[in-house]
Length: 248
Image 1 (cartoon, rainbow, N blue to C red):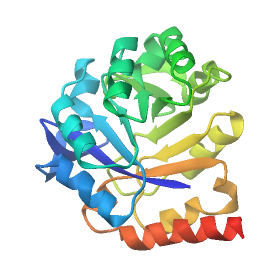
Image 2: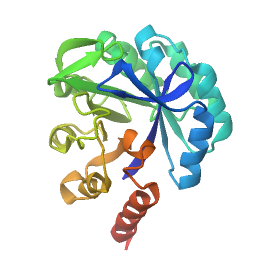
Image 3: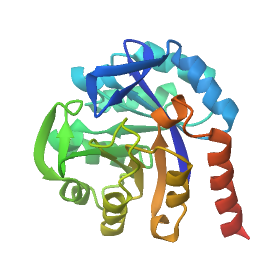
Image 4: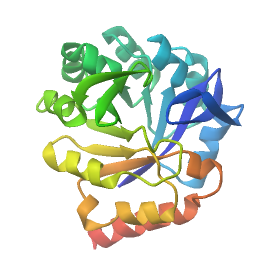
């Protein structure tokens, strides 16, 4: 189980949104690289970054901030937001991004996603952001006709390394993860699934460690870390304890 701390980038700063609304952005750190370094110091081992401006613009916007983060930390980094072509995928992987997350492209151009996954095995994930049961695109500004499961099934056997599943209704609201829907998705496909949206407390981390969630690769945590509702050391100790228990 991997606990991914999240850095969402808007105007070069580290922010959190509520339900993907850019008008409801709270700035938590003006220096994203410093924030990434703090997450690494706390013991996190894999960082999640989203270029929010890039998701809306359809191209990378906060590349300078991402570059600084990559220069600052040594842990693996996954990145989503505005990556819409093979040159963009390749460029970020060459810069040191461990895994790119393709969201809007998964709906608009699934052939591109499959080609990227084939060309860069293990380094391409798909972001499925669900709003009222349907997949949202373009920075969550538009909703498609596809369900998360329908879209995920398109990429079975395509070499996609993970599905990052976000419940938009819970994102940034600290209402708890939608584990029922996330686990149902994980059980219906063979691709590893990462839970996102709403992780609020240590109780959510405990729920992630229950046997029914064992198919999940991990979960993303954002606002709960920033406002102090989730103690990173306690959360990581729980995860480490589970891993040690399974290994013994």
